[in-house]
Structure formats: C-alpha cells, structure tokens
Length: 95
Image 1 (spheres, rainbow, N blue to C red):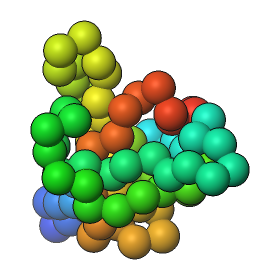
Image 2: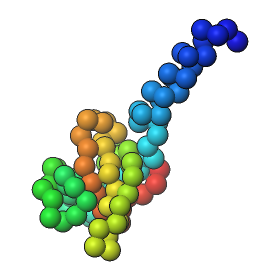
Image 3: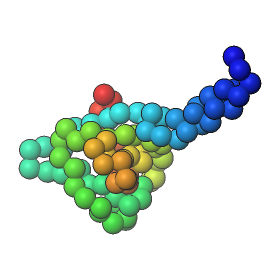
C-alpha cells in the first residue's frame, strides 16, 4: 500500500465513525393506532416535545441513559437525520 493512501483511509474511517453508520436502527412500536411517541428535547418527561412519532417510524438510535428509573434513547429520524431528540426505550424495536 502506498504511504499516501494510509492517511486517506484513516480519515475515511474517522468520518464514517461519526456518521449514521455508528447508530443502531430502530422503529417505533406499541404506541397504538391513535397515539404518537413523543420525541423530546432531553431524556425525561420534563423536557419539551419536539414532535410526535407514529408506529413504524424508522429511527437511528444513539446512546441511552436512565433517568428516574426510565431508559431514554437519543435518536434521529432515518428520513431526516437532522431531527434529533430523546424517546422512551420502551417504544423502540430493534430492526
């Protein structure tokens, strides 16, 4: 391998590690036909609601934290990765 390609490969590995490839895919489940899962600005009920997510919404799951006995995961929408927030892990299904 040429010496000039090694730095390029290392940079590509770093960039891909920071992209959506490092996230787990998940979908919203269990909200019911007339309910929405609340995407919140932070991990807990005290944070503002950004938007509601219906069953089947595809998400990129990042890290999860426990707040007052409830597991919350930081997610972004697969279709719109710039939209991020926290949801209760109870309503996520691994894809």
